[in-house]
Length: 474
Image 1 (cartoon, helix red, strand yellow):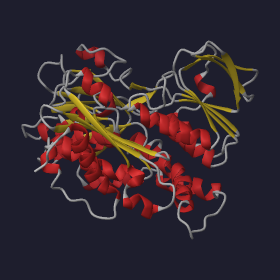
Image 2: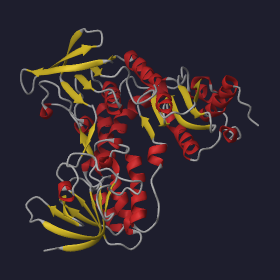
Image 3: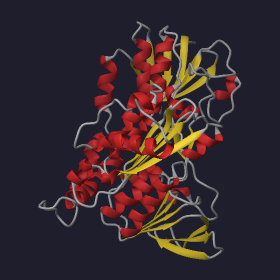
Image 4: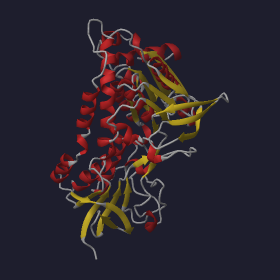
């Protein structure tokens, strides 16, 4: 027996799901959103917001110490920093999000959502009977992703931190070992070191941190980490982990690329080696899709291999781009398409912006040089030291950073940009706009940056490109 009929049901109430629900309902459709945890999802409570709150005190102190005449405390008030983190994570209370959902006219269905057939979804809440819902127009899967653990001998997932535990911890670990040198591993290494961890070690299997970015970005980060006492092992693989008891320190055996084997002992272990889509128990097999795998979609965000075009997937669950802002972008496109607008998603694959909020900050968009070459483009690049821009010196002594542009020489347009340095994330949107709009370098030459700001690096990059590659700007 069907309990209720909806035009649209969204399974998953994170950032992508909320946006898909709101946008779908703007055309007058009846929309329900299913969520079994906190409404607002990973970014609000266990990722973007709490992690940035943990990083901010150390980053602010570093910025202050670069300014002659300014005075900074020598230590962070850890209790206050953790309290601020708790506040930015809404104290893990979703009542404000629930109120907002009601204001936009979307019904909240608490429980675990599972597809049970074409346009049919069952919802089960703890201790309650299963309810069956029929959908007239679309089901949107926005169930996100979870931490993925590698096959390491002796690894017990119950005794280690994943990203959720790392961002919500209430006590600073004395010795922290992090397996994985991507964004999560890098940010948590620096945050907990700033907050007072005595020893922090990162083990990364690739040859530089942030392996998906330009090598100079990871190298700059490794140098900064080494200077602040974080041990970094790249081209290294964790072979095994052992503990004598549940509450005892862990010992990891690590094999370096040289063939040497070392052991690292830690009171806390963080696994930050990637994500997997949350599709194991949402009923995909009932409609011919494989459980545990990403849901493949077209550019309308409609699932491929499902007849009728009624199933959509947005956010991490489709594996197009595992970032909050790209998931929200996909949700906007899917919601508009469901509401009747003929629109497609392409910005999330052409110009994906990403920021690692460490010090130095790493901000990138589009392709790196290697990726552009692999795509068969005729590539030209240019780099410039951001510290040589007048605006950088105004921010304080010792500002160091690098900017790099990747240019498709045949079309004379940027296809990628990377910035490394304090607060460079604020430079990124200009690059994103230039790539999305395919603005020719000839036109960028007439975009005048304000003086003295960091944005003057755009003029310096174009001048360096002109001088290096013999380009004439008119």
